[in-house]
Length: 235
Image (cartoon, rainbow, N blue to C red; front, side, top):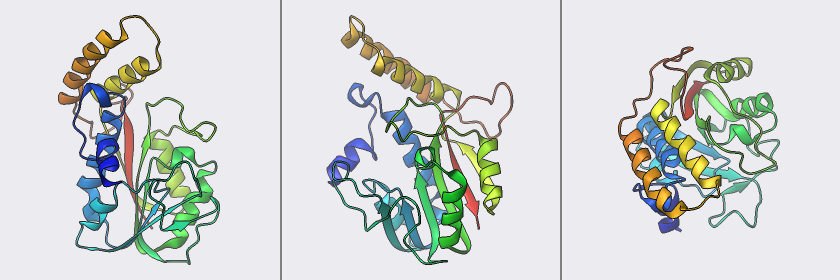
């Protein structure tokens, strides 16, 4: 199981064989690693899937415990969550966790305000919510691919749910966004000489990713394109 996670989610090396997944998953892993210091105490990973970031989270000496929670799915799980939930009410008492992690989760949930209020309910006072959402990505998990968020819509959702000190940052800038668009286009296209084109796309994307510099602000022009977002919000 550990080898599967490392080959699909973490410690990725950019090759022609992982062209489709590298940029998005590498940027999420970096966001988790670079912001793990904000977490401490008891942590809930909601919508945890294979729990690919469990070891990263537990490597933080300030984290006391990790709990992975997700819905039942016999096909999806190679590593079962610690707790199953019904997709509506989080099966934990009020103020149970010091931190909640939701990576690539909000875009799949049908009622953003409801789930944010549920997360706030199970967070302790001054608890931290950390997560990521895609911005440029193809439809996936159909029919449960519900939303694409802008930084400003996320801020409104968090504030309406009662969170404070909300911080929103890009997972990748305009070059990373272009790389993701290229690999998505390549992955879903059907044309001749695709095997040769794959290597051309690989080297273009490698150059784009190498020269990517995520913006520190958002505007209507130069800083208006990004691959995805990560956020930190406080109860």
